[in-house]
Image (cartoon, rainbow over all chains, first blue to last red):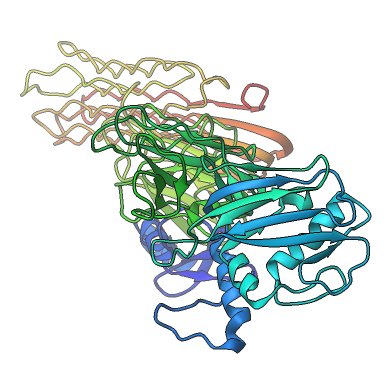
Length: 62
Length: 567
């Protein structure tokens, strides 16, 4: 999952996406998010969050 | 401010005179300079009264007149003493130019008056006279001054410095210094001494006096003041000069220490981040010099926001929004996991928040804090799923065994906030596992929710294995500083104990059921709380072929209330 910048608000948007690419949500941060850099924020989030879409969630359950 | 830099070694042309003047103007900002004395001209002179500057033995005479005429050195008397002094100052600064208020001096006198500087702070009636001599060019060999103007006077003062006008910020306070003299310096008595001149936030100049010594050092600069210069004083001095060796046995300005960067450090106007030059090396304050208070929207420590006691948390983990699929938070084996969101939204038909990698020994306590609204309207089977995150307190104990019994007794069920777990079934010689203890009831004061315990494994036997233990559910605390809107499902149920296995004659006992988790929710306002909280304990597993059944896990509980306890 990756961190992008919303050009309208300058917010940092971490997109909650399945490995297949389907997006199921997001986490928004203000431009001044308190980490040393956007890269540091993205790395932090990658260690915490994972996401699976409906189809792949069902495959895991089965 | 316009300032053209005059470079060392540059040949200045006549047309660059304005550049030279602008450069000098900039460098005179709070400049300390040798002072010779001052005229007090508070009474407007009368016609033909004079003011005389005797420079290198030549008297340069200025005559105050009612009508300007054409005599060199005439100065028109104005409507007030202030206006007359302004006319005089204009002629002193432009002695080569005849105007309606002053008649140009002779070429020789123009040169003489250029050896001096003149200032009337705030347009007043005190005219200060300063020396422009330096150790590189010192044309003044003698100087005196006088006036015939009634009630006006000349005062020789060589133990003060003159500080030119400038504006500084001292601790965020704007200080407008309009120019003026320093306090009088007292000569040292036995050895040289270095003093420091500084200006404070009240626009007051003051000397910090050093210690006399054969080789003196500058004193510690005063705090909360802007330093201007260091002054080297010698025994018997009667005047203070601009530079070293300018005049033997006299004091002099040792170092120009004007801190221009410090002067413009108006913290109220800072727009950029302030970043130290290295990591973990620069302190803000010290153990003995602490700030009385630090204000900020969010203050971080080692990457995590502090000030965490505020209801709703810090928001440092952003605004969480899940509209479909399952988002999983890795607990990294933490016994306590806190996330500080600015808002939480779990919506749609499948949106789910789940957790992985709990602490298998203690279980995991989850704290979801939100500065804003918490919206959980997802119609998924579980919008939030904390199953399998239990353990620790309330876990059931294992049944008594001797290692090779024919049948196994039942495992103990786990306890939770609603009660202890059930004991597993005992057999003739083997006691079933005891149920886990009851946990403390949820309280809005504690802001924590304990996980339910795990069940225990059923007793094994010669005919088969005991059933697996049911997992307890994690403890969940939601802190909502906005509106709480819950119509979905939170699944915090305990897992069922597994069944024992056997060989048709003998068998193991059933595993104990895990306890239901506990859910504590505090909110500022309530939109809806019509959703489903599933906190039931797991059932005990069945014993096989003579094995005992496992005990059931206790139910968890919920506590939802408006926040009346935490600021």
